[in-house]
Length: 568
Image 1: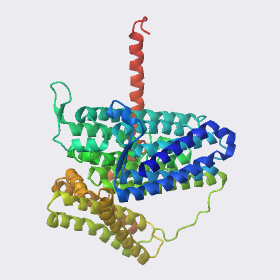
Image 2 (image 1 turned 30 degrees about the horizontal axis):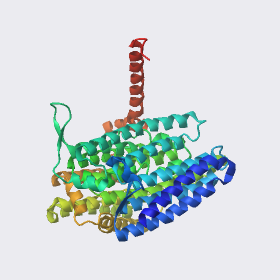
Image 3 (image 1 turned 180 degrees about the horizontal axis):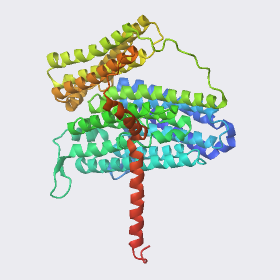
Image 4 (image 1 turned 90 degrees about the horizontal axis):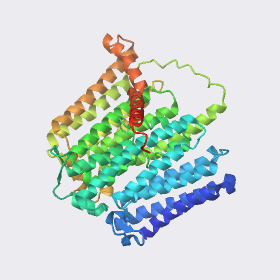
């Protein structure tokens, strides 16, 4: 029944999108009805698929007549496991919310039926992508996602800014698509198949070595393949330095910004998880994935602090969260990355829809809300400050003790990684909560302790239950943690470095509340506005790409002018 359910869902979504595109104008303002009915049915079918896959195991199947094709990689196959089913539920859930929200939000738009048609077709393409049974079919749907995203971002084709941003997105994502294509070609050359089960089985065999160029250095075949595939994930998930497209998409309709969290901007996390057996065979790639994700998370969240526009802030927040997700993949915590992907996808999609509604109301309200004076805003409260410092210190000390005294194998380092993430997440929440200085001290302290307890329990659940659910094969998740494990001295140094940063933040916070002399030296104060301008200008990456584009255009024109006239 699973193959029938998946094919029925995809067929219904495809027919709905095509029907709305062809006959939507005749339905006028009612063109959303068929799309909503189909996407709700797709949600119910996805839930059924998840339940069925959980009880019966993964299933691979092909479209009828696919076996008549002479080449194995051309077959339109499907592979539905727990990861695919979870992604189906996420995509259909977010798409249902966006369809319903768009009824009133897009009312009166001249491209009303066109928008719902593209929305349905994008949902179909995402569902087909996450159920792909081979690297070839995944590549096909992956590239179609790029094209449909371009069409959705350029929906308001009368806006030059929106069209230019959509084209910029298309160019960057196509670079990632090209890298993904090269990775698929190399995988077929090395393993002779692109069907996922066969590909994963052959990847566990002794690895081949490839020469980067004739007579040049050699590289492990799995490492080369995963690096190329990771470039595709970097482009889709807005990782440095391919992140410049995401913040510029905020001129698109708000439902499109929300839809990107249904498997578009977070597609990088899905891709790495789908190809986890390949990445688990290449520790070098996993370490690079960690470094890229860490830098993206750091830069994205820092730039977010310099923005004033709410949608742009949310865009950079998404960039930071995608870096966090990729960093989790680089640490071998693949299941945690999917947990993060699902939680963040639903939360941020809802947040974008709420922001769009608030912006729409603000445009109709000419007056600013009355400002309330806060007489206690600078009162120092010792209890919450002490509680915050204690809770911030508690976890890193516990982690260091566990890592040095209890853990003696790299496999168990994954548990420490998750505790480390729990500590960082709870510390961020504590810092934010402490800024609410007008609340009673004991309430803040109790809330801090409750937040830490809740976050730790959530991470422990994600470690035990969700990891076991997503990767039920014995030893599979442990193998990924082992492949991504860092030397223990490096891991301890990383914890100490972050601990020093957080402690510095608490010290500066203490001095600021007590109005004492600042602890920052003069050179650090002078550096602050310079750093602010660097992050305000997005590290000047956009300017760099603009200069690169002008240089390429100039070179192409010179080459074109130097060619003989008889060439076409």
